[in-house]
Length: 430
Image (cartoon, rainbow, N blue to C red):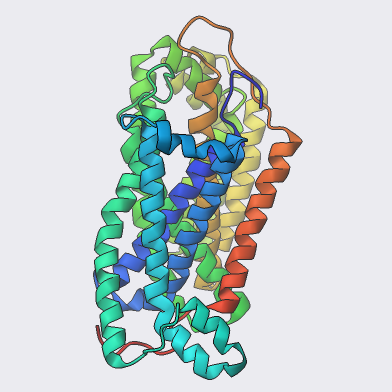
């Protein structure tokens, strides 16, 4: 990767997948810690996603190291005051808790699978670590263990996402990273993206595998996501307002490049397609006439706002905005057309799995864009008067990133074949 930009797509995806793991913990904890039974049918999918995302995050860190054999130096020579060492410890602990979650949540069903599939009895016995008891007492004991794990996992998840943020936020030499808001922002962003991934996966497996998952459950998950999106938007707005109002030269240069410069498409995709449009889709769909009227109004107003209001409002804080070139209008027009198409998809005639799944997909892409803007642009603007850096991902990075994504999909598919994604019998209590 180009220097002085030492962290690229691998770290972007590492931060992204660490955040995605939060959704599985949240949904599983709603079932096991708070006894919200309506989410029980998707708890196992959520647990599997949490484990998968953490494993992919570790793979991305391994790729970034280049020499995985040297990772042990962190344990032998690591400083306890380093956020990197904190992250290794928290990720390892979190992964162990997640795997324990998966084991105690599935082992009674693995025992049932031994009887249902005699030819594969040996495999399920190995996966259950020799466990063969599925009596009501054993199920009740597993539920108690899962409740304890859920209570432990929630604060551990907050610690994981906070420590990951502090790897960047405690670096004083990078103006775009050094912020007290970065820790809470990462926690909220992880909650939003992780919940969106759970919704997207549930909608997909419901459609493809025909699992007995109710549409109402997806709508309930969509409501949770709709409540979380404005919180993430608030944190992003607070950070943007603080930086632009203070107008510190080093920080303002980073935000100018994100808002109107090279990274502007990624920034505006995050805000519009990753926050605003999903929130509109998740809200109770309006009648077709209102949707069409709003779409026409947006088509008319957006070019005018791009030409007049947008530069005049932000130009006071960001001088580069005051002299926006005319071509900026056209991407906004095309974005408006895409918004219109998505608003039409939000019509009530679409099933909840389609509507909520589409919103979740956009949220996941939006948070990925947010992670990119958090990691990459601040590296290009050093605090000291050195030349600005440059970063263009190489084909090797693209191929390796695609390969890790493929491994994640393969891992999920294999696990879905080995383990029942929904409980074979609904528990009577516990």
